[in-house]
Image: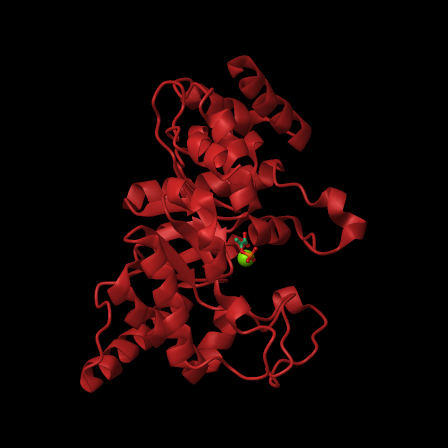
Length: 326
Ligand code: PEP
Ligand code: MG
């Protein structure tokens, strides 16, 4: 089984006509890096670090986090890894986070970077651990739930403070670490051109982006059929973000579940997005569809996609493109 996986995994990640894709994986623990497919992907496009904070009764120390990130970096042996600072709050609550109160609208509440900018010492502990681990591999840093330029600037200032404190203590760290943001709130998508001037990369978090664009709670089963990533409004936002990143010349990837949906591949081609990060289980499916696709007609496809009026039309169009290629 392991060998078969490795064999399929060695097939290049590119369309029939040679358009290359970077396929990376999303992980929430270092253990996942032992999976045989890891050797075949580009790297880690999203390390969800909140799991380091879960199933315990106190905050993980800088040292403890450093060890985890370092181990991950070493396992990846030079491949890039995007570490996302903790996204706690929303649906993820912790007993020992005593300052987290029950909220009427947790997804619109005290969450992720919002907590970090408020509980700065907690934020700094994680930032320093990541900066230090950066010495042991190709680590990039990503902030979740950004909604404004000010938040990014504040986070960057705090990062500079962390660097200075490490420098003063003579502790080695990655001074040139790349900094990016998750685009997962419509406000951030709408000002993507301005945000692009502040950061090295964007990663589109479609799980939250879809939830917030459509005002559909991603956890609520009663309205699960309204949670529609192929809604024309979502496609419009994706186009805005892709355009902004391309114009600024910064790296752009997608790390939400949609990245692992093979049906979306013609959409990424049309939008000029060639970096996808997905769960390990999705890699082979995505690759199997990718290698049959023809990228050359993508410009036409974008116009056609943008003129679709319903998600059904969009899905039918994407399916047609894929069927034609099989
Ligand atoms: C997302 O929102 O798309 C994402 C990748 O992050 P999470 O699912 O952890 O919120
Ligand atoms: Mg998210």
